[in-house]
Length: 449
Ligand code: UDX
Image (cartoon, rainbow, N blue to C red; front, side, top):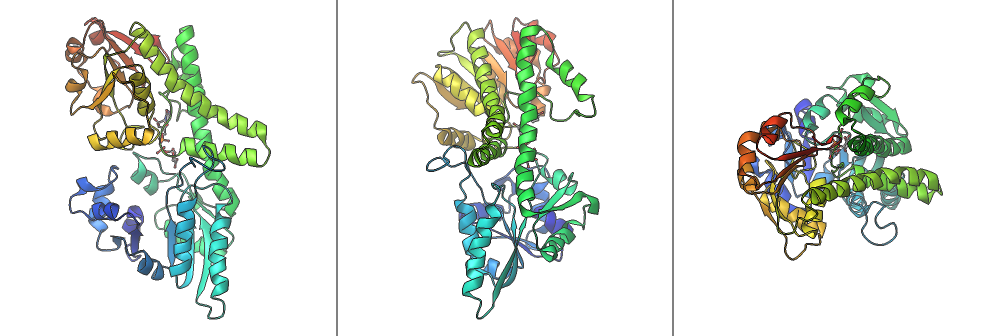
């Protein structure tokens, strides 16, 4: 919406949320308070807030006055009831659709922006149409439903929105599709705006994320094989990526993909496939997740093995806690899983991340329901030195730029010997300065160096 406000100065955009605290933070004069860190976002908000971009808790009047409503609420994986562990919980989508049904006036275009399971638009439609029927006599309300899933990635959100590979708009009401299409056309070339039916639009989003995640599980599976055989994963990735049919993007091995989307969307796809009796399809996609969890565990096990089979009461520095660089988001971050494994084994984990605050780390652990060994603990560190001082091992889990330029000569001297550095993102080039100081080095897809 911040990007929309930049390109459409005459369109009034109001973001509403039932979470008053969140809205208060978005309205703060200090951009440091904004609940989400994203390169370029603060500036956009500061430029347009109060002009054509507003943040409010006035849900009723905002819906009443709107021609178009984007439903952009969370759709987490259900934790109980039917489909628990797989299906998305659509309670917030339903709640929002009911609010739109109640408060809207005249004709309203409802855009489904949240990533949802296929056929969710039908649920929204039923809620809205029920309201249309009640009101039929006085004929004050009507709705069009459009699906327009978002493809931006965190960390590059603003540039992805300004220069997307495509914008997807699905539905059957041509007029509504064109109204939304015309908004995007202000800054996006027409040939990048794709129109489909509702179900293709919803399924395309799940499929795109499943394919992306599948690539990561594929390269991660090969990283394990490289470590056993002496092949180097970055060489293999480079060779296969130079085939234009494969392409060189999204081939970086990692401690497993994280983030709010990949796991959830694949679980949805698996659930949907099982629901339709397509077991082999469900099993096929589920394997992408099985491999991802296996990769996380595999790394935890390697760390324990290298530290003479035990990490009990040892100090382990974790560099990077967000699920990727340039974001403070920790949802499904592999760092959480690996820190948890190590703590289960009795380690004292010292975490550094340039953007994830103390409070966010605490929150992440609380939501994770981790099972801590009594002897273990975690500490959030202000700087790298605090994290690594007298550490038995350093594990790099997020590819933050500042970890690429660490002065290893200085850092290695501060560690307990014989120490280990585990690079799960392949960002360290300067091996000599680590080794010179008697520190062992292991990297993902290359093993002991
Ligand atoms: C993803 C999709 O990319 C985006 O199109 C969709 O709209 C939302 O989900 P996001 O989760 O924000 O975006 O980040 P992404 O860059 O895709 O990274 C996801 C995870 O995969 C991260 O943990 C990242 O470290 C990991 N990853 C990515 C790899 O392990 N290897 C890679 O080559 C690329």
